[in-house]
Length: 498
Image (cartoon, rainbow, N blue to C red; front, side):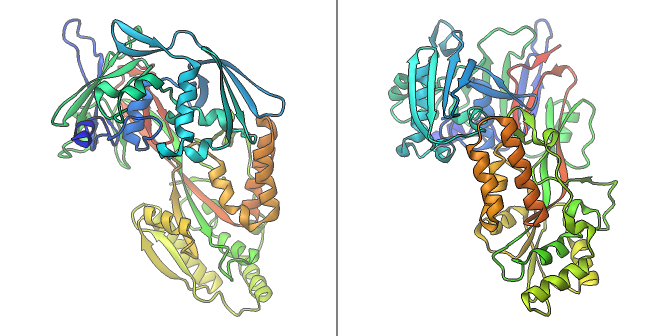
């Protein structure tokens, strides 16, 4: 029954509010979810609903706030000259919550044990690859932690924002006897909230505030959504306090909008024909930022970057510090480019190619229109296969495709995941990627990230087309609600209510 009991925490992404009686102040924020989480072990949990709860009940060394990395339990830190050794000084007021009368101080050993669990292959942590370059972890004293890496990693602090790096008390973990994070009594958190109650029937759960905050939310109520009403209907009926708006939803309230999805085109450069840069450039001419796609550019947001707008490098958004260069094929004649490429390949035509088009997103119309332009202007007749966007992602990952249009929403702020798949196609790109990994300092890394992106664009390994934003709408009497764009994680720690 563990699964059903814990299935009472959260899932998709809709929020509700209820009012306290007495003074009449709204101090409960209820989250209505389609499914409930099964595991609240930070070093193992992966589902958005699980990460949502963990984000609100734990404090890590760092966290994302307002789209930037901010210190949390970490008071300050230093990095050695070679970029390999990080030394963290911790706050002395962070505690694990056992009960209102008993708290346990959070120490450097708790963060060390959490990372050791990730690196212990018996844990089967899905975050092992993100931290596998940790060479040594040393607890200097209760408030000082030293971590040595085997290679430089400009995104290491970003990784420490992940719930996987939340602290874990070794003694408490051992006492749970394998049930850590699976039951209320087997969850030990150090954030401003703690899980208080899980209904036996899996219908709702409550998370209560355990640290004082003026005008803060006192309780988060998580209820199971019966799917009889849409999120916007529940919101309009004042049954929920906020929701992630779908296309066409228009409701009064505070709108939090952030760019977290990109619609791109990508080539399989292992294909004999598509290995030619000029042929790729000819196809890409009609796709890049959709400038020659025939699309209504007033109705979409053009994108010229391979990264999504929410991605950061260091503490800055990549879009704020890096300007992508326009690829040269945009100033060429697409048909002549194709003819040149075919001549280089000693081919008369592109032959039998298949283009994958998503069947379940609105941008599929744009992809279909571009395919028609290829036929009309390039005499390139491709087979078309319509698939759900998720299936296209799988096909790209497995290499079972020729050309694919795909919708990309990153679940982590790891821009290297965008760059690295293309490193095998070009030596200069692989060299840039290597320099990003081995360069100490964010400003130096930015230079190579920019170079890497421009190589990808110039050689048409991937073609950015347009971007999409998510909207979260909540009632105006709540404020300071923060959304982590990577997974649409709602953070209510600093939220206030009037």
